[in-house]
Length: 195
Image 1 (cartoon, one colour):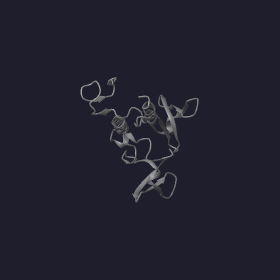
Image 2 (cartoon, rainbow, N blue to C red):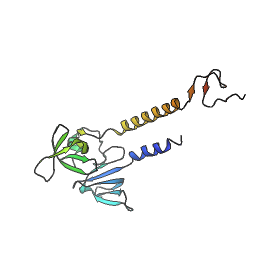
Image 3 (spheres, one colour):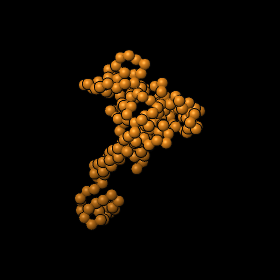
Image 4 (cartoon, rainbow, N blue to C red):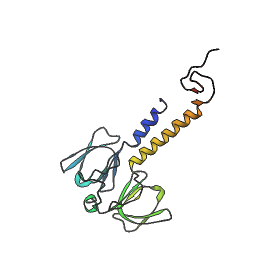
């Protein structure tokens, strides 16, 4: 069991980050603390000692560690009404693997290349699909990435279970010898007869 403890801790850390994305395109990893009325939000930026207050008018979205988008507040994120859900921006959202977030216009995907025009630019940029963490359209449709966090947890549990059973089988946990005190087979915990 001691061998699995670091694996469980690592799994917990993978799902433990909130992300604050500003309308300017800046993004911050850390912990969402709370909102202060309708004027601002308090966010603990990773690596800083004090929490920071961000004006609500500058916030594009807050993505919590469970994968739910919490801004705008008190609006269900699974809702299909795009006029409510995406009221904070009229742009598609592109998040790169390094965490950089761009708002702009998605055009198409051709041969592993995404064509995206960031806001305040005049031309579409060709971006390799391997560099993109997620691409979400302004209507809420997900083009690339953002798997459901529950699927990740189920997959992780399945992998751990398979590894556990393989360790038991390979490690000699179950054999079919006729020695032992259990009546025809040897299992972990059986006593060995003294001769």
